[in-house]
Length: 111
Image (cartoon, rainbow, N blue to C red; front, side, top):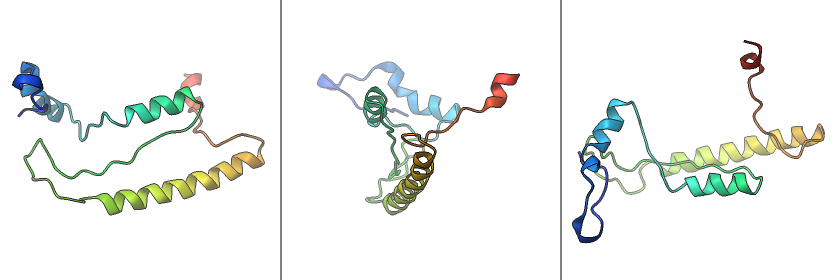
């Protein structure tokens, strides 16, 4: 199954014809390119960045596009995440830190 869309003049690289099947065999459940810019810019400017995606179709199985599928759940997750980060930030601020960030598991360093 093709994963890409033909470009100018109908050009489609041959490896795009098996891309989705290759990813499915590797266990990939979703792919997203657009939000790479968000997390890259956030990192460059010392901010946190992230994305919550909803899936409206399945190019692997051929399931049809469903307008708005998963959007309400994605919004709920985003709002809950923002509220949680706010609480964690207030706790970090009380400890003199600018914001909450996940800490690296120190057990890795002792092995």
